[in-house]
Image: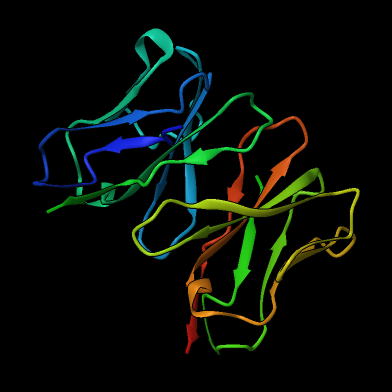
Length: 113
Length: 112
């Protein structure tokens, strides 16, 4: 069974540009989470989808970040316009139910210059 | 909100030695404590977890201990091997929540 996949693995953009990250959860997993790790710091929660609905978006830094999960399958996280402090590794995770183990993707390393 | 402190940030040991990573937390409602291992260039993976009704759990060379009164929990790795080299993250989850709060990670280096 394929694990959680994320695309791209790396992205280097300039300040002010737009970037869209994609996450494909494990098939059948209704719960999808986005996290971010700034270098050397903790992995921080951004938001949680249950199917196509946003269950908790309390971790989203500001309105430059927009997450979607149309149809309840894959999810995208768009950053527009990107700022220097948005650099980090963005992880996606999925779980079958909210209380089950979360399976992480390999992450997207975003560098904003 | 919850605050999770993880120490040390870097740990260097010789192959065969033991390694201990410690985490403290602030939220007394935390009742689930997973540990994740992230090898270089790979995804974080759950390696062991413990729930608040248990004081210790062991799985081969790794063990986790929990002291709910003192609000701290630790990961113990015995007979370390080079393939144990990775970043280890502790986390806590409060009752009724799905969302883990992570520590900052410990980079473990096992020298052959």
